[in-house]
Length: 259
Ligand code: PGA
Image 1 (tube, helix red, strand yellow):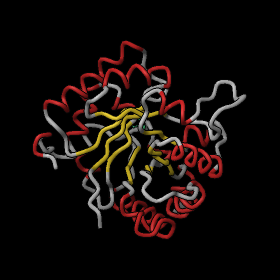
Image 2: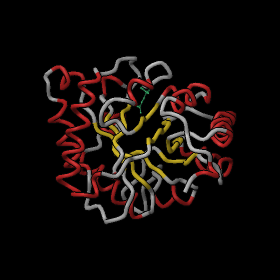
Image 3: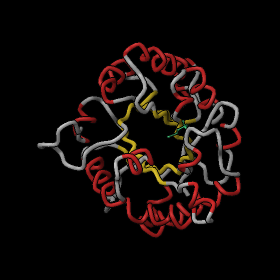
Protein backbone atom coordinates (compact mmCIF):
# COMPACT_ATOMS: atom_id res chain seq x y z
CA UNK A 1 0.00 0.00 0.00
CA UNK A 2 1.27 3.48 -0.85
CA UNK A 3 2.44 5.27 2.28
CA UNK A 4 0.62 8.60 2.38
CA UNK A 5 2.63 11.58 3.55
CA UNK A 6 0.62 13.25 6.30
CA UNK A 7 -1.44 16.22 5.09
CA UNK A 8 -2.23 19.14 7.39
CA UNK A 9 -4.64 21.76 6.05
CA UNK A 10 -5.87 24.93 7.72
CA UNK A 11 -9.42 26.13 7.11
CA UNK A 12 -9.65 29.82 7.96
CA UNK A 13 -13.42 29.85 7.32
CA UNK A 14 -14.77 33.45 7.28
CA UNK A 15 -11.75 34.80 9.15
CA UNK A 16 -8.79 36.79 7.94
CA UNK A 17 -8.03 40.21 6.52
CA UNK A 18 -4.89 41.31 4.70
CA UNK A 19 -3.22 41.79 8.08
CA UNK A 20 -3.53 38.04 8.64
CA UNK A 21 -1.26 37.21 5.71
CA UNK A 22 1.70 37.59 8.05
CA UNK A 23 0.55 34.41 9.83
CA UNK A 24 0.60 32.50 6.52
CA UNK A 25 4.03 33.91 5.71
CA UNK A 26 5.29 32.86 9.14
CA UNK A 27 4.13 29.26 8.51
CA UNK A 28 5.84 29.22 5.12
CA UNK A 29 9.08 30.62 6.53
CA UNK A 30 9.13 28.17 9.44
CA UNK A 31 8.59 25.21 7.08
CA UNK A 32 11.24 26.47 4.68
CA UNK A 33 13.74 26.71 7.54
CA UNK A 34 12.73 23.35 8.98
CA UNK A 35 10.68 21.06 6.67
CA UNK A 36 7.86 19.01 8.13
CA UNK A 37 6.82 15.40 7.62
CA UNK A 38 3.59 16.60 6.05
CA UNK A 39 2.22 18.40 3.05
CA UNK A 40 0.72 21.64 4.32
CA UNK A 41 -2.13 23.74 2.98
CA UNK A 42 -4.00 26.88 3.99
CA UNK A 43 -7.52 27.72 2.82
CA UNK A 44 -8.18 31.42 3.42
CA UNK A 45 -11.37 33.27 2.51
CA UNK A 46 -11.64 33.84 -1.24
CA UNK A 47 -10.75 37.53 -0.88
CA UNK A 48 -7.26 36.57 0.35
CA UNK A 49 -6.62 33.67 -1.98
CA UNK A 50 -4.77 35.52 -4.71
CA UNK A 51 -2.68 37.56 -2.28
CA UNK A 52 -1.84 34.53 -0.16
CA UNK A 53 -0.90 32.48 -3.22
CA UNK A 54 1.43 35.27 -4.36
CA UNK A 55 2.92 35.70 -0.89
CA UNK A 56 3.61 31.95 -0.56
CA UNK A 57 4.55 31.30 -4.19
CA UNK A 58 7.39 28.78 -4.54
CA UNK A 59 7.24 27.86 -0.83
CA UNK A 60 6.13 24.70 0.93
CA UNK A 61 2.52 25.75 1.68
CA UNK A 62 -0.25 25.03 -0.81
CA UNK A 63 -3.21 27.38 -0.94
CA UNK A 64 -6.85 26.40 -1.34
CA UNK A 65 -10.45 27.57 -1.52
CA UNK A 66 -13.24 26.63 0.90
CA UNK A 67 -15.97 25.95 -1.67
CA UNK A 68 -16.65 26.35 -5.37
CA UNK A 69 -19.63 26.36 -7.70
CA UNK A 70 -20.30 23.26 -9.79
CA UNK A 71 -20.50 25.28 -13.01
CA UNK A 72 -17.43 26.70 -14.72
CA UNK A 73 -18.98 30.15 -15.28
CA UNK A 74 -22.32 31.86 -15.71
CA UNK A 75 -25.06 33.88 -14.02
CA UNK A 76 -24.45 32.79 -10.41
CA UNK A 77 -24.17 36.00 -8.44
CA UNK A 78 -21.77 35.76 -5.54
CA UNK A 79 -20.36 32.37 -6.49
CA UNK A 80 -16.83 31.39 -7.47
CA UNK A 81 -15.94 28.59 -9.87
CA UNK A 82 -13.19 26.01 -9.48
CA UNK A 83 -11.36 27.49 -12.47
CA UNK A 84 -11.43 30.90 -10.74
CA UNK A 85 -9.88 29.41 -7.61
CA UNK A 86 -7.18 27.76 -9.69
CA UNK A 87 -6.65 31.02 -11.57
CA UNK A 88 -6.13 32.79 -8.24
CA UNK A 89 -3.40 30.31 -7.31
CA UNK A 90 -5.36 27.61 -5.46
CA UNK A 91 -4.20 24.02 -5.57
CA UNK A 92 -6.77 22.65 -3.10
CA UNK A 93 -10.46 23.15 -2.37
CA UNK A 94 -12.49 22.06 0.65
CA UNK A 95 -15.89 20.73 -0.47
CA UNK A 96 -18.94 19.53 1.42
CA UNK A 97 -17.92 21.07 4.74
CA UNK A 98 -20.71 20.54 7.27
CA UNK A 99 -21.11 24.31 7.61
CA UNK A 100 -22.10 24.31 3.94
CA UNK A 101 -24.09 21.09 4.05
CA UNK A 102 -26.11 22.36 7.03
CA UNK A 103 -25.97 26.12 6.49
CA UNK A 104 -26.39 26.22 2.72
CA UNK A 105 -28.42 23.04 2.20
CA UNK A 106 -25.77 21.25 0.15
CA UNK A 107 -26.67 17.65 -0.65
CA UNK A 108 -24.31 14.78 -1.46
CA UNK A 109 -25.23 15.24 -5.12
CA UNK A 110 -24.31 18.95 -4.95
CA UNK A 111 -20.98 18.04 -3.40
CA UNK A 112 -20.33 15.38 -6.05
CA UNK A 113 -20.95 17.93 -8.80
CA UNK A 114 -18.52 20.36 -7.16
CA UNK A 115 -15.88 17.64 -6.77
CA UNK A 116 -16.19 16.93 -10.49
CA UNK A 117 -15.78 20.63 -11.29
CA UNK A 118 -12.75 20.91 -9.00
CA UNK A 119 -11.02 17.92 -10.58
CA UNK A 120 -11.76 19.32 -14.02
CA UNK A 121 -10.07 22.58 -13.00
CA UNK A 122 -6.99 20.74 -11.76
CA UNK A 123 -7.69 21.27 -8.06
CA UNK A 124 -7.35 18.64 -5.34
CA UNK A 125 -10.71 18.43 -3.55
CA UNK A 126 -10.82 17.72 0.19
CA UNK A 127 -14.25 16.12 0.56
CA UNK A 128 -15.71 16.51 4.06
CA UNK A 129 -18.03 14.00 5.70
CA UNK A 130 -19.24 13.59 9.27
CA UNK A 131 -22.18 12.76 11.45
CA UNK A 132 -24.25 15.09 13.64
CA UNK A 133 -24.44 14.72 17.41
CA UNK A 134 -27.82 12.99 17.18
CA UNK A 135 -26.45 10.54 14.61
CA UNK A 136 -23.36 9.98 16.76
CA UNK A 137 -25.45 9.25 19.84
CA UNK A 138 -27.62 6.87 17.82
CA UNK A 139 -24.49 4.92 16.80
CA UNK A 140 -24.95 5.87 13.15
CA UNK A 141 -21.55 7.48 12.43
CA UNK A 142 -20.27 4.72 10.15
CA UNK A 143 -23.55 4.44 8.23
CA UNK A 144 -23.85 8.22 7.74
CA UNK A 145 -20.27 8.72 6.65
CA UNK A 146 -20.36 5.71 4.31
CA UNK A 147 -23.51 7.07 2.68
CA UNK A 148 -21.91 10.51 2.33
CA UNK A 149 -18.78 9.05 0.69
CA UNK A 150 -20.89 7.01 -1.73
CA UNK A 151 -23.00 10.04 -2.66
CA UNK A 152 -20.39 12.80 -2.67
CA UNK A 153 -17.92 11.39 -5.18
CA UNK A 154 -18.41 11.63 -8.94
CA UNK A 155 -16.51 9.45 -11.40
CA UNK A 156 -12.86 10.12 -10.50
CA UNK A 157 -10.53 10.00 -13.53
CA UNK A 158 -7.29 8.04 -12.98
CA UNK A 159 -4.37 10.05 -11.70
CA UNK A 160 -6.40 12.82 -10.05
CA UNK A 161 -5.54 13.84 -6.49
CA UNK A 162 -8.31 13.63 -3.92
CA UNK A 163 -8.47 13.81 -0.12
CA UNK A 164 -11.25 13.10 2.35
CA UNK A 165 -11.76 14.70 5.77
CA UNK A 166 -13.76 13.02 8.53
CA UNK A 167 -15.21 15.87 10.56
CA UNK A 168 -17.85 14.90 13.12
CA UNK A 169 -20.20 17.91 13.12
CA UNK A 170 -20.38 17.93 16.92
CA UNK A 171 -16.58 18.05 17.22
CA UNK A 172 -16.17 21.18 15.09
CA UNK A 173 -15.29 24.22 17.16
CA UNK A 174 -16.59 22.53 20.31
CA UNK A 175 -13.38 21.34 21.95
CA UNK A 176 -14.83 17.81 21.84
CA UNK A 177 -13.30 14.92 19.91
CA UNK A 178 -14.39 11.31 19.43
CA UNK A 179 -12.35 8.58 21.16
CA UNK A 180 -9.38 7.15 19.29
CA UNK A 181 -11.31 3.93 18.71
CA UNK A 182 -14.27 5.81 17.24
CA UNK A 183 -12.00 7.78 14.90
CA UNK A 184 -10.16 4.61 13.83
CA UNK A 185 -13.47 2.84 13.17
CA UNK A 186 -14.85 5.63 10.98
CA UNK A 187 -11.58 6.08 9.09
CA UNK A 188 -11.54 2.34 8.35
CA UNK A 189 -15.12 2.57 7.07
CA UNK A 190 -14.18 5.52 4.85
CA UNK A 191 -11.17 3.61 3.51
CA UNK A 192 -13.42 0.62 2.76
CA UNK A 193 -16.00 2.81 0.99
CA UNK A 194 -13.24 4.46 -1.05
CA UNK A 195 -11.83 1.05 -2.01
CA UNK A 196 -15.23 -0.18 -3.19
CA UNK A 197 -15.53 2.97 -5.23
CA UNK A 198 -12.01 3.58 -6.53
CA UNK A 199 -10.32 0.18 -6.25
CA UNK A 200 -6.54 0.26 -5.89
CA UNK A 201 -6.48 4.06 -6.40
CA UNK A 202 -8.17 4.46 -3.00
CA UNK A 203 -4.89 3.71 -1.22
CA UNK A 204 -3.48 7.05 -2.40
CA UNK A 205 -6.36 9.10 -0.92
CA UNK A 206 -5.37 10.66 2.41
CA UNK A 207 -8.14 10.59 5.03
CA UNK A 208 -7.80 13.56 7.39
CA UNK A 209 -9.43 13.99 10.77
CA UNK A 210 -10.98 17.37 11.57
CA UNK A 211 -12.84 18.82 14.55
CA UNK A 212 -11.16 20.63 17.46
CA UNK A 213 -7.63 19.64 16.46
CA UNK A 214 -5.24 21.75 18.54
CA UNK A 215 -1.57 21.77 19.56
CA UNK A 216 -2.35 19.72 22.68
CA UNK A 217 -4.21 16.84 21.00
CA UNK A 218 -2.61 16.78 17.52
CA UNK A 219 0.14 14.24 18.27
CA UNK A 220 -2.38 11.75 19.68
CA UNK A 221 -4.88 12.29 16.84
CA UNK A 222 -2.23 11.97 14.14
CA UNK A 223 -1.05 8.58 15.41
CA UNK A 224 -4.52 6.97 15.37
CA UNK A 225 -4.74 4.08 12.92
CA UNK A 226 -5.92 5.32 9.53
CA UNK A 227 -5.51 9.04 10.25
CA UNK A 228 -3.44 10.52 7.41
CA UNK A 229 -3.55 14.13 8.51
CA UNK A 230 -5.72 16.90 9.91
CA UNK A 231 -8.12 19.58 8.75
CA UNK A 232 -7.74 22.39 11.25
CA UNK A 233 -10.12 25.31 11.79
CA UNK A 234 -9.59 27.72 14.68
CA UNK A 235 -6.08 26.56 15.50
CA UNK A 236 -4.86 27.30 11.96
CA UNK A 237 -5.37 31.07 12.29
CA UNK A 238 -2.22 31.61 14.35
CA UNK A 239 1.09 30.47 12.88
CA UNK A 240 2.39 29.33 16.26
CA UNK A 241 -0.56 26.99 16.92
CA UNK A 242 -0.71 25.72 13.35
CA UNK A 243 3.04 25.04 13.33
CA UNK A 244 2.73 23.08 16.59
CA UNK A 245 0.11 20.86 14.90
CA UNK A 246 2.28 20.45 11.80
CA UNK A 247 5.29 19.57 13.95
CA UNK A 248 3.17 16.91 15.67
CA UNK A 249 3.27 15.00 12.36
CA UNK A 250 6.97 14.43 13.02
CA UNK A 251 10.26 15.76 11.72
CA UNK A 252 10.67 16.38 8.01
CA UNK A 253 13.32 15.60 5.48
CA UNK A 254 15.61 18.45 4.47
CA UNK A 255 14.65 19.73 1.02
CA UNK A 256 18.07 18.88 -0.46
CA UNK A 257 17.72 15.27 0.79
CA UNK A 258 14.32 14.74 -0.88
CA UNK A 259 14.22 12.54 -3.98
P1 PGA B 1 -12.17 23.44 14.23
O1 PGA B 1 -12.81 23.37 12.76
O2 PGA B 1 -10.76 22.93 14.12
O3 PGA B 1 -12.23 24.88 14.60
O4 PGA B 1 -13.01 22.56 15.10
C1 PGA B 1 -12.48 22.33 11.88
C2 PGA B 1 -13.23 22.49 10.58
O5 PGA B 1 -14.39 22.89 10.59
O6 PGA B 1 -12.65 22.22 9.51
